[in-house]
Length: 90
Image (cartoon, rainbow, N blue to C red; front, top):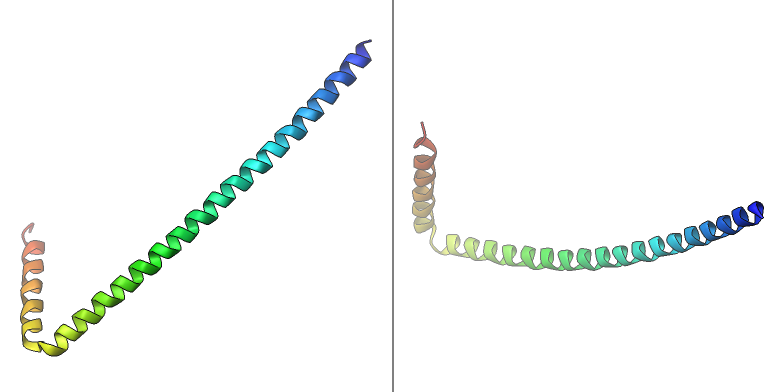
């Protein structure tokens, strides 16, 4: 009788272990699917940001080519402003 109970409990534990293993596998697949989806969205956003940055760089280059002296004045003013802010704490 005791051996039958032990065998019965062993069978239940093995079945529970197999069920837990299947559940973990299913959840891991779900997490992997979500990861792949998030990765795809991140790549798309990175592509969009890169494209916008390139467009901004192109606009700046065009402006500098058309207005070299104004661009130089703006750069000097920005440089002086940054230097002033950096030296303010000294």
